[in-house]
Length: 486
Ligand code: ZN
Image: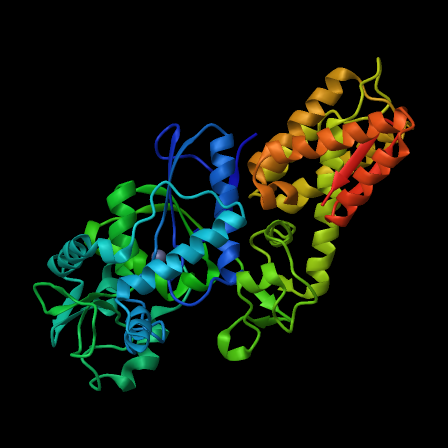
């Protein structure tokens, strides 16, 4: 089986062939540390977590770099307006790094709840100012940037004479140059399509560093060119992020890296699609902005109830990462039911008893799941294969079909690999308690209840069941014992 992934740059699925035999370098644009993490933040984190997990499953040694944007990201995503972190710091009378730390902690907490693995390296833009200054200098030396009033801008027109600005997003640079010509001469930029590599800080700007051109700060796109090549080398395998970053962020990153180094740095560009709410883009200004914390507590008018982190994760994985996902409470409720059926089946699987022969057909499940993952990380197909196997599990559980020991072992192994290792789904009990001892303690109590029942000690048996039920446990008697969930 060969892994194929969709390369946004070539606009087609390509076989994944790493640059270095068994090592993979992957860079993903992390969050702009400002404001609360929302569903839109969860999607790239989960998409590239799946890729990270699957590459490791295939045996690659992966260096996964996911940055934290904590400087240079200005209010209107462009070269003007106030720095978002600096503004928040000024309004709340905090050190900018206090703001950064606060949001970074919250982001990490949400990621942990979503069972997103931490990356290998998580560099901060503010911790790599020297590298960014060096990178800007390289672009200036190569003749693709100019200095103006203490700031440095990328010269798109000059660059486009030799290379192709717009190749990733498919935008036509001639049109962009043409439509922006009338604005020329009104700002310190030569063309409004040019973008900042270094900005001179205005007097009220509280985050600034010394550079040859001025006391200032790097342009937003610069961090990813500088940090990606610092940690992964001048050429690396994968660069990912949300589709909303394709232009201008990633387009500018390609231009910067090519201008400075004379060649491109990234072999495969990957982009996850967006999450919409009622068909609309999610945004603070649209009033449909729901934070991850609000999902987990249910505290938002658009939410019918609280949704657990695993439900949110499962909801995202039920769609292919390149499709849009439309959020609604009803859709999340359906995901919650689906996830609970899957996890109950997984628990049930552990308790099945093997027979001498199999009457169910479960062979080939592993290969079908691998095939789906190798086809551009098709998680919804993997999930549908697992649901097919669930039917067999339930029939064996109900005594209508049989399964041999060998097939049972294989089924257990495949469920463990795909549910836990690759899809990263955990039972909610584990999520809320985080330990195995807890589950064993409940099993112990319920086994004592079974013994009491066998001894016709109904008082003890009822007491255990009633008190556990009062604590929120759901207990079901089955032919070979019991099942429980919280
Ligand atoms: Zn980036």
